[in-house]
Structure formats: C-alpha cells, structure tokens
Length: 418
Image (cartoon, rainbow, N blue to C red):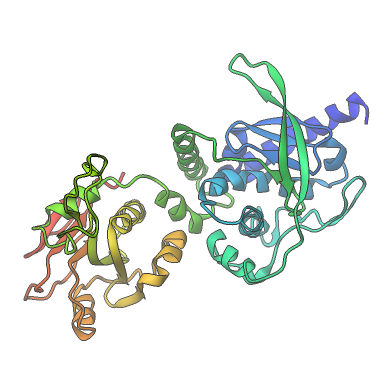
C-alpha cells in the first residue's frame, strides 16, 4: 500500500466522520472526541482506547465500502458510550469482550438513514477481506433489548471460539502533540470481526468522568440539532447509573432512627480488627450495612428524564449499603417487582416501566399482602402522589428532587436532579 493510498483512506475516514456529525450529531460528537490514526499492521479493522485515539488499518478498511466503514467507526464510538471495559469486573475477559460487541453492534445496526426509517445508515462489514479472511461480526437478533451483562450470562452457557493472542503496535499522542510508537503485547483477538479491545482498566476516575461528560455533551449536540438522527435513549439511563450517587447513603441509613441498621449488634463472631494485633479480642459490629430495604421507584409521567437519571444514580448507592433489597417500580399501579436475586441485572439495565399517573397506595398494599416489614422503605419520587392515610409501622424515607410535593409522614431528603 503506497503512502498516497494511506492518505486517500485517511481522507475517506475523516469525510465519514463529518457525515456522521451532520446526519447523526450524537454519534458524530463522540467520534470528534478521538483522534483518527492510521495503524498499518493492526490485526483487524480498528482499535480504540476509548478516550483519545481510534486506530484503523487502512490496508483492511480500504476493502470496505462507505456504509461498512461507517459501521466500524460507529462501533468504536460505542465503546465510549458503554464504557465496556470499566464494567467487566471479575467476568471472563473473552466472554465479556464478545458480550459487549453484541450489545454495541445491535445499537449501530439500528441507526437509520436520514429520511428513510426502514433503511439502516450503516452496513455490517461481513465479507472476505485479504489478510483477514472471512469476516463475520457478532450480531444476533436474540440479544435485541439486552445489555452486555445479560448477554454475558447467555454466552457463559455456550461454547465460543477461543481468542487468538496478538501484539498491537500503535502511535499515541503525547502531551506535546508528538506521536510515539507503543507496543501492547499480551492482547487477544476475541474474533468479534471488527476490532481488538485494548485494556481500559488503567483509566483514572477523571478519565471515566470525562467519558460520562462526553455522552451528556453528545446528547446536548443532538438536542441543538433539533433531535436530528439517532440518539440511543434506551442506554442513556445506563450511562447515568454509572455516575456517583449524590446521597451519602451509608451515613443516611445509619441515621434513620437506627432502624435501618437492623443487624447493628455486637458479637465476638466478628471481632474488631483494631486490637487483634495486640492479642486483644474486642466485640465488633455484626454488620455495617442496612438490613432488608424496599426501594420504591416512581415511574409516573410526572417524573422527568433528569429526575429519572437521579433515581438511577441513587439506586446504585442504596444497594451497595444494604444486606438485601427489593425494588418496586410503579406509577398508579405496581409495574414491576424486582426480587433480591434479580437486582444486579435490573441495575445493569436501568429501565423503568410505567409513565401513567401516580399513586403509592398499591405499593404499600403489595407489601401488606406479602406481609413484608422492611427495615426501611425508601421512596424515589417527586411526591406528586397519593399516600395511604395511615403510615406503615416501618420507617419511611422519601428521596425527592428540588421541585417536589409533600408527604404527611416519613422523612424527606432533597437531591438535585441536575
């Protein structure tokens, strides 16, 4: 491949980026945040560090038409959007790479061409490519509507092709703007058909916050363009759930009349670590977490998108400081009950059924019918609702946005939704 060929591919990639900015401002804004760098020798179409660079191999991408190359570029943007590497946790690396590709590809595949709601904007790069062989990306309709965590659980029960070890050499930009060659050994090609996933776990908290800010800025760009093009609203709540809760839940739960900390007893079964090195056994607290919490999520039409984003953030903080949690989603009626074993999957999805009027009486009636007496009831709501005349026997905490109604009983904590 001649230098002129590389330059030609570079111009095509940049032209497709500007097309994305014009047709789909949300996706285009995210693509503008990374530097497009040719990387001959890359063992696949592309790779990204999610923050500063998107590398592509012009020797491979030149065999793709514009719609296929656009698919590859949007796929790399998807790694920014979903911050897939941060969420891996202790999962199997290969299975997680495949799960995130399935999740991202379904988002890209449903981006529609402007003015034609039945034709996709981009096309899957499934074809035979010199140097790569037969390419088939990870896209399966059975995973429509599923987040990466749920897809991972399905893949864990199946047999996938083993990854191939690869070594990646790319040019990265220094603070002065100069390019420096970096070799990343010990990586693997997960056979996803599009890219090699570079490690993201070394990113700092400020860089992770930067990614969250970019997504919000991309939404703003989409809104300024009068909502032109695609904006994957169904995953935006998932992004907001990765933000930090505003409420200091551990202190708040401890202060709720002491009732929330139902296991807060003293026992020699868990001695204080402070004095063990001196050979002294002192009783320690049985638990520093709340007991059983029921969390009521108001999904009525009066709950704005900003307030629901606040709800998603605070849910995570509550669950982290409780022994067990039951989540009840409701508007004028109970829409969904999430039991303890399903809470993790629910938080990964962060989608709330509802949108009608507001009435909390069915929620408290449900708890009465099930004979549930939680250590604390937490209501995430704007309090424009109807409550039972008689307060329950367990403590109640209302977590509300700046603009809210009032409650005849229970403690109220105000959280700004912006």
